[in-house]
Image 1 (tube, rainbow, N blue to C red):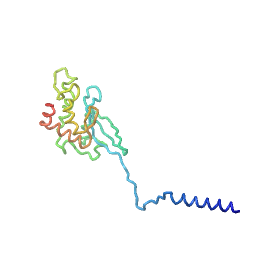
Image 2: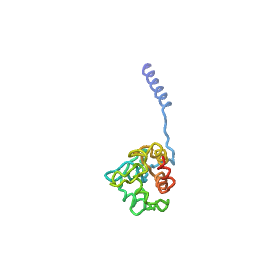
Image 3: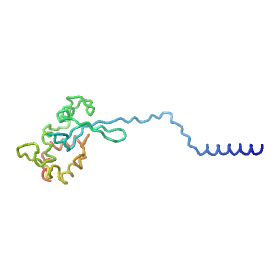
Image 4: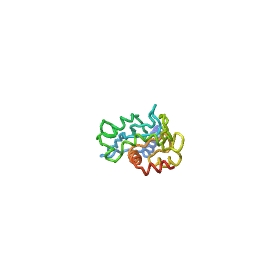
Length: 180
């Protein structure tokens, strides 16, 4: 009987010891976990998205885990959605971002010039702004880095895209870009 009692006491002691070092989690009464949603914004890249499309347009979906997914759009669809003329996850309130931010839509005709020193699809000799061959120079990339573009495959998106489009409407910025 002595051995049984000793064994039982050792077991009780061990259980009490393990229990005292274990962690007890007590939920807070008013705790509501943060619900993280995906965010959508317009985006554009200097990478060609297909034949005769010299830059890429799309909608960037930023997931709660910080990864990003791009849905590519044609130039016309991008302009319609950004102007609020067409429904968009990146513009659910149908805001005309061009009007609100003083962006001239002719900038979309000139975007190819950011990456090419001459238009590769034109039989005429139409000059671009890039000083590198089929991509901006290092100095031009430094200017583009303000918008999140440090290499040809990077995307300008969100507020940086709006600022980028505003700068493309500014002849002083364009002149500086050409001179680099």
